[in-house]
Amino acid sequence: MQSGFLTSEWLAFAIPFLELFPKYVCVRPNGEQFDCTQDDFCDNPSIKHYVNWNDRASIHNWVEDLDLTCTSRFKIGLIGSALFAGWAISAAFLPRLADVYGRKPVYGWSMIVHCLVYAAIVLSRSLTLTTSLMFFLGVATAVRASVGFLYMTELAPKAQQTAVGTILLVIVSVQGVLVTVYFYFVNQWIWL
Image 1 (spheres, one colour):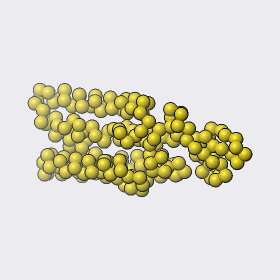
Image 2: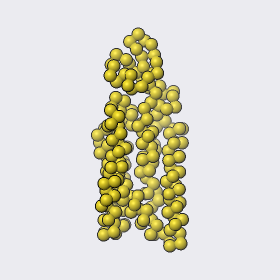
Image 3: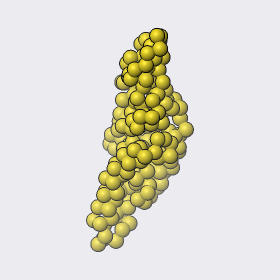
Image 4: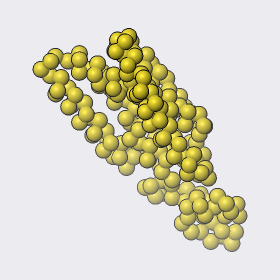
């Protein structure tokens, strides 16, 4: 139950790293090289550029996989916003289904959808598809987070319910730190 609860947290906590632009080096037509950002070369095709992979901030992430280099910041922001929009919209009605039909079947179906969507996000190389999948991941996350938490604590003995919930939330908090440490040492998002 705890591993099911924690799955999409790896992705949610990693969004700032997944959308982090690498350090670029630009080359002017005369051969001069200088540090630059995508703003320097996206509107000026005469300036060639390449990623400085020696810089620690340059990681293999969605900027590379989804070709976000010259994409508008609005579209990039939609990726993370879609997750939370799906979560917020579905939180209005999906947890009620667990009260009506039982927590186990609603949680089980949600985890199946969650796993399929998560796998599709890993395989996706399309910005539009990834943004759409993030919305559906948010929908599944509403059940996973609210119904899954209640279901897990209800399955624990009465005396340990507070401890089980506390331990789970401490582990969730530690995940944010672990994601940061991961990206500090590993230059590839896909293994996360």
